[in-house]
Image 1 (tube, rainbow, N blue to C red):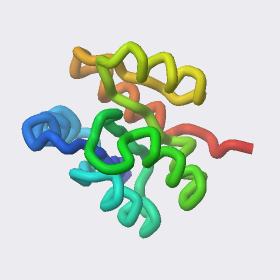
Image 2 (cartoon, rainbow, N blue to C red):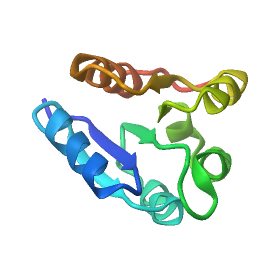
Image 3 (cartoon, rainbow, N blue to C red):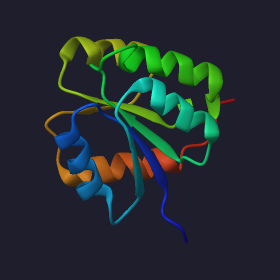
Length: 123
């Protein structure tokens, strides 16, 4: 059985490396440092889940989610935000998007990726 492929949208190189270390044994991790690059990768296909920061340069996490819903709706169903921003948590909840709150335990991020990768497509 192959590992799930996870697109991580994170503009902080240190945090991106942390995701690679945390998920490296349970997933193939591809990092995009900006939402526009992440959208290109998502449109090319092949991902099982997306973890995205909220606060990033350019369109930011919510802008990325909006475009992902339009250009790759099946993948948008396998999307989660990772944030410590309480306002963003409330907005994400209204959007119906899973949220992993920072700080998190290693087991929490692995569990979320497994759930997203197994999610049924939206109907």
